[in-house]
Image 1: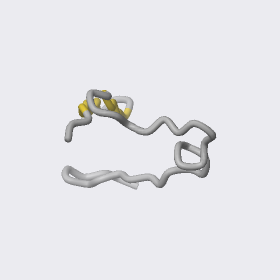
Image 2: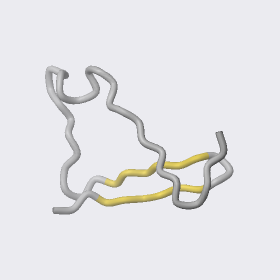
Image 3: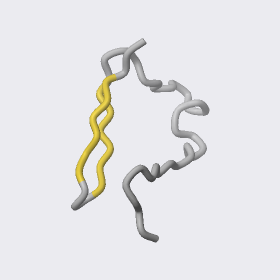
Image 4: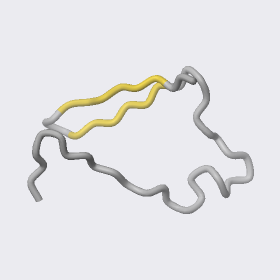
Length: 49
């Protein structure tokens, strides 16, 4: 599959990632999220309200 400018890659959340954990670790204000693809680059986002 070829990605083109403007394409969005989304995934679902696997079972047990946060909601079903004994002590959920949800995102909180100030958390930094880094998503990247080798050879393409990275996107950094900070959680705000």
